[in-house]
Image (cartoon, rainbow, N blue to C red; front, side, top):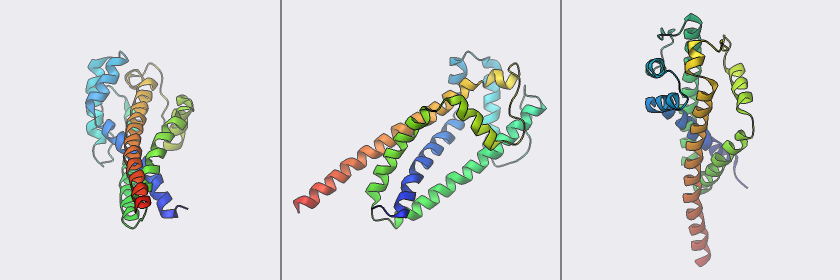
Length: 201
């Protein structure tokens, strides 16, 4: 029977993995540009806006941006997006600290990483069964109090359509799934080796 602190540590692994994937993609200008090109977006506008947004999201300031091409309502939405991102940063740091505290005192570290890796693999598969549009709308309703729906002809929607966010989410979960598979695979070998060594002795 796994201890409660072991279960908490297991649950924290996919949280840390997917948030790490999120933040690496959030600051990856080459990823933005690749998605914009693949979706045949106006790259003149898209490349410049992506660069400005990455710079804006990169610190903890709370000022309303003046992103070129965006109107006042869209810039206010970007300000709210940044507030959500900063809260997620705090969750990420808190998760790492709590995980380290739990692992230091844990006796079943192999099981933590193995089951944590398995959970990291299973979550994207489960989430994939839910239509992305449902998740997209639900996330915005939960996370934002201000306006988050804009006309289809707006620059922001034209530059970052729903497909952009689908590609973003897909790559977050894909990276996490790969990392989870590696984590579970390596610790499975370690667990089998430990069991074999115990039986042999």
